[in-house]
Length: 390
Image (cartoon, rainbow, N blue to C red; front, top):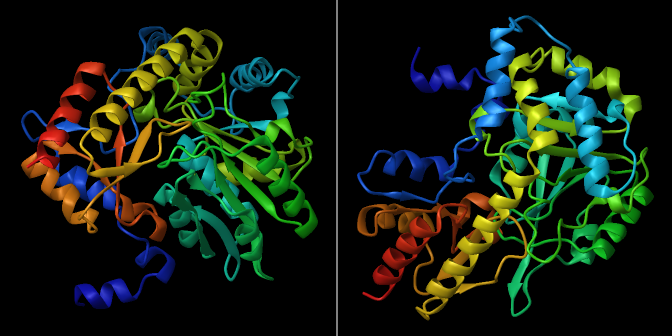
């Protein structure tokens, strides 16, 4: 059987899953001597020792067996405490579920909300895994393009609501946004929630970057405006706040009434998250506020460096991000940013992500992750500025 014939036997949802343009550039430049890698969404700090030590203790204690599908009670209780501190009200541990990374939370949420023949609205530019997870699940992502202008990136709520048709089952919202840094206001969240209630839609709220907010201790959240039984799935991860990208542990928050359904879906996908990872995550939640503050300070410094340095070249267009830790910028005269990202690996020794990976609205832009040491960000900015000035 030929390769094409073999591929033809697969389900179209799997066969047609898009390649990641971010990974293409990552693989192209991986291992280049002296390259500064700003292409993926992670910083350069390793996981803090107090978190890793909790995992080591768990392994030494023999916690290597199957564990709770929903998450160990101690982790779910720590999640409730963390949310209480963050949002200033009580939360039940029953609404939190441990998942294999934020992607595990997204996949479970999508499986519950939409399936074959359904549609999910996704404002773009957006992290490509959001739309791809919808497509792999058999549903259809429907992009709503955000606008870039003098006011920065904006989401037209009338256009967002008009995109909802008879097959629409859910709406994704990532705020603060990867890659643009756009952050929804409390009023925008209230309007979106009111529309979702009226239409009977689920909201999948990706609030991964809610602690990376430059104007307030955190960004506005659906938790600020919603009831506990509203049709909202909150997806989050330990990857960003606590430098745990390689651990692959996240969480899903939902109305507690869905607990058995979520447990079933965990059972039939990952069969749970390793106990030692959950012990580490529990310690991160309870003892990690100082590290989050350090992360935010590094992000703020990185943002200031790249905005100042690239803005001075006169060749780039961008909006200073209000949240997350990315600069999403366009280079005058360079519309094909896939080719440009590959060239910058060769010609500037800096790794960036091409904007087309983030949907149609991202074409013509590049994403730069500035959650790194100020020295590295300064050097990367200098290299890019020299290249732009040639």
